Image 1: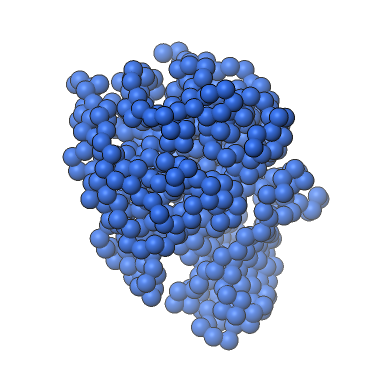
Image 2: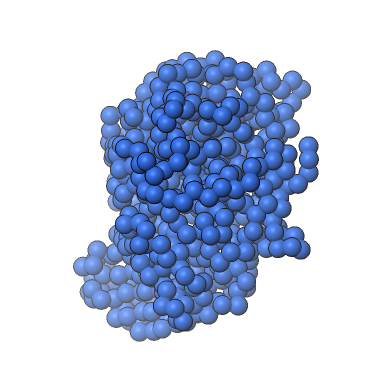
Length: 559
């Protein structure tokens, strides 16, 4: 199933990373990176997000080892091709941040040790007790656990789990000389490691077998297989990127209940909405076995652009779960038009997550809300209440970042008698060109309380990808007559959170020119419904990181 028009590097990436899109692409070549200084990037392009992380140049996909160090600095590693604008030549990129928004690009953390190897997805931990023996007299030693994928001609060779260790807090790594889990399997990857009571636990994907293997270790070097999770859920063509995390749980009144365990799995291709997507299972974990509480498959996001998510390593059970994902889809990630700006792909917003039981006490939802946005919040552009028939226009063309945050809080929604035409719509557009994205919420149960998002009006490359689905919808029910929506618009990515994160959607889009006007419309609302709107400018995180030449240089200190 490999196309002759694809060059060898991309064909290898397709076989090593899974079933990537079979499409002819232009494979741009960028300069080889340095081992000692960060890649320099231009973050001024009209499609470049300003509060979301994106690589300085080249192609980014999965989040990889992620942790917060003892100084409160967040470390974000990611799958990275620094020399091209499609997947292939996989490295681990690295960036650090004090707040998850203002990022300093660091030198590349992990390079392929040989020409026939790719450094694939994995995780990182802080070995505070020096269980590995790599860190005498240290409490900040970092161990990266990841897959080395070997090539065999134009096909995938063995995928083995290996480690590298860092004695300087995660900036420079030394490769351990032997694989920690040798393998002849060609689809065995993406180890995620956590600490459980008195030992390490790894969840790793047997991708073609729709199985997550669970291993344990006392020292990060010697691993024992203890169980498998398999046989339920959506399967698609393969499973990838498993995460297992202890999750705070609350009842519908907001009262804390016993923590549950969440097992997150990526599907690619064949996810329910097409291409790549993520699902999760709830259960218990005893240190060796994950036991699901039911056989329900739950989706992380109701869009198409939320994949390969990973939780930051939690050094203690008190650490809250913080989550980041790749905001793209393998069906079109190689086709998006940001290649003209020498980069492809961004990460979704960092998110806090927890489980909440629905008001009927029957099912659980993974609540997902943006991590504290205050470091990038700017001036208030709008704050008002609107009537049942209204139009409110917010011109944010003078907002330098071309990024805004908005909220709509609704009260007084009747339980019955709401007309099917009662709606709150929003539109982002540029009147001069007609580009737009739009969304809205229908308040009536006869309309199934549907929220929709439509990106058809801002898909500058849609003629190249028949898989760039343009419309999405999701039921979102009021609670006690209340409903809310919040969102972040950031040049070429929008994220919307319904009922304070009970449901969320991540969606990328590509207007021909910047969208600079937001319009709210209400129609046919009953008199009892009150709608409060707020729009706030977001300040560019990257502008603060740029030098006088307009470029973001990152860490240029030679170690």
